[in-house]
Length: 193
Image 1: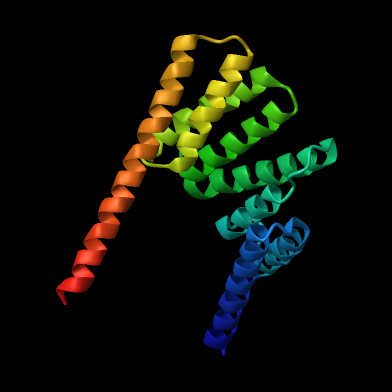
Image 2 (image 1 turned 60 degrees about the horizontal axis):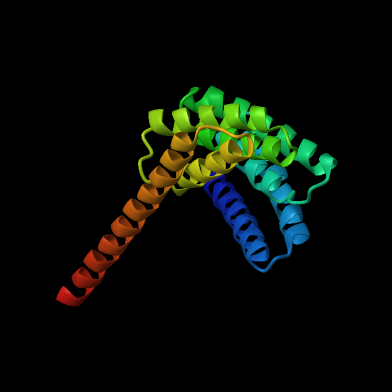
C-alpha cells in the first residue's frame, strides 16, 4: 500500500510541476501560479514544512510573481527567505540553492531601487556560487551580468564592471562548448551502433 501511495504522490507532484512549467512557457503566469501553489500544498502535506522539496516549491511560486507591485515583491521576498532558511538547514550555508536565492533577493532589491542592498546580495551570491563549485552555472553568469548593471548605475569601478561581463561571457562560452561537445558525443555513440 505504501508503494502505491508513494507512486501516486510522485505522479501528482510531477504532473503539477510539468503542467505549471508548460503554462509558464505559454505565458499564462496566473495558471502556473495556481498549479505551483497546489504543488506547494501537496509537498507540505507529504514532506513537511522543512523539506528541500517544499523549499523548491516556494521558489517556483515566488518566480511567478513578476509584476512591479510592492505587494508582489513582498510575497516573493517572504517565500524566498523561507526557502533560504530551509536550504541552510538542509544543505548548509554554502550551496547552489542558497546562492540562487541570494541572487533572486538581490534582484528584488534592485527592482525596488535599493541598489546598495542589491550589490551586497550580489556579492554574497557570487561568493556562494564560487564556494559551491558551480563553474558552468548559467545562473552565475546571469548574476554577474546583473551585478555589472547595478555597478554601472551606482557609478562603480569600471574595471570590476568589465571583469563581471568578461567572466559571464566566459561562463556562457564554457557551458555552450560543453553542451555542444556532449551532444556530438551522444550523436556519435548513436550512429556507431
